[in-house]
Image 1 (cartoon, rainbow, N blue to C red):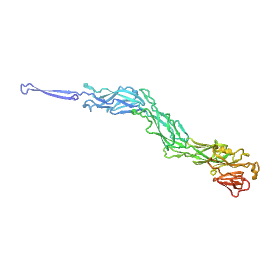
Image 2: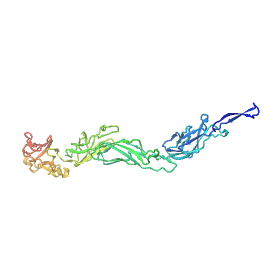
Image 3: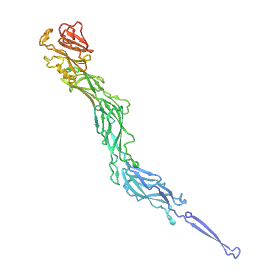
Amino acid sequence: APVVNGVIRITFALDDGAEENNLRLGSLLLVVFPVNQAPRFVLLEPDVRLPAMATAAVHEIAGFASNISRGAPSELYSQSITFTVSQCTQHAMFTQAPYMTPDGTLVLGVTPTLAANAECAVQLRDNGGLENGGADASPLLPFSVTVLRVNQAPRFALTRQVLDAADDAGWVRLPGVCVNVSDGEEALVSLQGEVPSQRLSFRVLTVSSHPALFAAEPMVSPAGELSFQTVAGSFGSAVVSMLLQDDGGTADGGIDVSDASYRTMTLNILPSPRVGAVIPSIASTSPGGEVTITGSSFLPALRLSPGSSSPARNPGPAVPVVLVGGHACVDVVVHSDERLTCSHPGGRGHLTVSVTVPEPAFNRTGSAAGAVWLDSLLFAGTTASLQGFLALGPSQDGGPVGKSPSSAGLAEMISGGERQLETLATGMGPESQATGMGAGEEGVGLAVAHAPSAAPGPAFSDKGVRALAVVDEVVYVGGGFTRLAGTPVRSVGKFNGDSASPLGLGVDGLVNALV
């Protein structure tokens, strides 16, 4: 047996057969010296493939060497063994030179972001020595280490968690919502060729408070610009989630998405103020008159905050800025989301009324062109019973105030002529002497504008309207006349839209004001 060693005594006898007791004994001592047997092992997978890492890392590959033997069975407990790794090329790719532990584990550290290949060899040695022709080393077995150019995860940073936009904004484009957009490959160095560039795209998932919130759903360009298209009159909140993906794939453990989960932001589509009616819609040129503006969305808008399940208004005061003809309407008081009052700045003509509600990130603004008409009027008001606008001012023949408001002027004011104008009473002209007024005194006129589909109310009769008031949809008329809509009165009466009636016993002389 080639692996057995020790001492053997061999005894033998010589007998010539001629005489009795003529036996001769002899012995031989055979010494078999131990000879060190070469250790041995095998590499079942000699090609090591590792991904290029973004940071330095030490890899341990257990079981890289297998079937490890010290040589002869008798050497199992008497000898120690050591692996030696040598002849590695591309030393720059290693932060920890490869070595192997006695149990066959390969340990090595690779340079971060470096893709390369190295050829190495490993040998197993024992401490049995070389005496008597022994062998203490195995053959060199080659192996290779390849650090692969593995796709690195793309990355980006989200600069905002909450964004607000107006419902009538249309297309909204917001650069810089996502910054530091990268395919993750910029730091990768390859000793095997140039690292190719990659195409990036954002995957965007939007969960809206209702399906008609967007005409075009939010999207993010590769440069990080968020864009979407709103729908006028449609407002609410949406949670926008985004993930950055490249086209590098996932081979060899590569990563082609930015995170394991989506990054989210809240997008609030806020209603712009709607300016509906301005009451009175016909007013004097003099500043200071109170106007009531009805519409919607005059209060700070409801918005959803991150981590909140229900929308809330922005805390703190937010007094709207109201402009009439480009000038500030002062003393603004917001009574509700649908109504506010202010003192108009004066002016002349068909004026645009705008309401701007301040918000933390931007201002919401709504306007209505020609919503109020300011002119040289003694009185202006509205009444549903007459289904139109009432105005009291100088007659066409004027006086010191000049040429306002004639029937033509009122008709022009009412939605560009879309309403019909009916003169219910004219000012006091040359016939004023019949009522006791001196000729040439300033006359006043009363007119009502009707929608085309509305039937005109009964006309006032007589002359001399000087004062007008509307209380609870009843029109009170004063002046110097004896009949109102065919009803006998004494200078003052009231009209409910269907018929006129005197106001008490009336008065002698002229009524110049109603308070």
